Image (cartoon, rainbow, N blue to C red; front, side):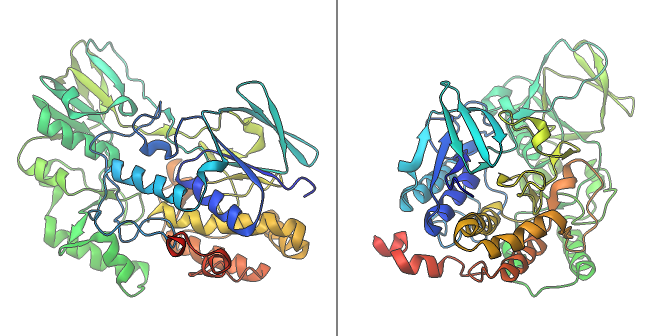
Amino acid sequence: MGNRRVCVIGAGPAGLSLARALRLVGVEYDQYERHNDVGGIWDLDNPGTPMYESAHFISSRQTSGFFDFPMPEHFPDYPGNRQILAYTRSFAEAYGLLDRIRLGTEVSDVTRSGDDWHVRLADGSREVYGAVVCATGTTWAPRTPCYPGRFDGEARHSGSYRDLLEFRGKRVLVVGLGNSGADIACDAAQAADAAFVSVRRGYHLIPKHILGLPADLIKEQSPALPVWLERLLTAGLLRALQGDLSKYGMPKPDHKLFESHPLLNSQLLHHLQHGDVAIKPDVAGFDGDRVRFVDGSSERIDLVLYATGYDWTIPYLDEDYFVWRGNRPQLYLNTFSREHRNLFGLGYVEVNSSAYTLFDTISNLVAQYLRDQVEAPRKAAVLDELIARDKPDLSGGIAFLDSARHSSYVDAGAFRRRIAEVALRAGWQNLTPGMFAPLQARSGSPRQRA
């Protein structure tokens, strides 16, 4: 790589994770963030963020966070959005990342010319880099369904939702029951005159706490089990704790436990049990102030809120640069472009665990790969060969649903293991648990310097 400078686009958690890794291995980079502060979607003031006042992490404090930078112990088990934002900012400050970020600077276009990457900024200026990392996230382009008929009420995507006061005096229908949809349905249950949530399929509902401990902490601290046995034990425990959810209107799941993104929520069952929210099937269409459902029922509704997800887009990069399938870029280890050397997409992954620690793991692989293109080309060539030919199974033995969303889904354990295997093959032995220690020993960790 003749031009060693790296362009990092985005200063949310993924972009900051990579910035730290690049800084620790001595690779020069510039980082751009269109908003006037770091934090990505966790900043409620960031235009277009899907964040809302009641949003909390769905992974626990104990299992989340950047490597070697744990969340403060005074945080609750599941921190709220403002705490996550403060934590993310403190991470950037602790590692001296802020002075390398050009805030309020939007990237408008990225193109390749030979081995160089030309980056045009919104102000018209241009920069040339040896590598580009797209780390701008996946929840900026709301996906809104279209139903037949005319609706006389208000209909909008959940990305515009901020506070439960928006529901006062209204009959509310939330369409979709992902984790955000479940949160918002619980807000509506508390504030609306009547609350309904429309679902197309059944979900396995996992409470955030089991036996007084965060559910994911129990999994992290338990012995590794075959998927079938873990599923059997977990399903039995859930039945004992929750009973049959179909008596509250929840459809029976059409998939096995763990085969879809988990629905982690402890409040929804409470509101279903108390009649504060009602489950409805898929929407069939609109008829004035009424919403019709596929079972022939209808409800008078004032506000329809579509919690129907987001299209993954990279607006500053022509679609031809990545191979897309089912609205997901097809990348090696969900990060490396197979078609264009030194083009990366960081954060374009869905996972059954905390994402922050995975960002760190893959960020270090990217950083050491970029460093060794100059300092140890033979090591970089090992990864070049794997990028071209390796087709790893990152499912961890789980048959994830055959859907567009799950085309980029990975099992966290399988993902970490494969990255460790790749690192060992290339001789990057620091990319295992404890991966930062040798690097920090040279300069001292932020906590040591403090």
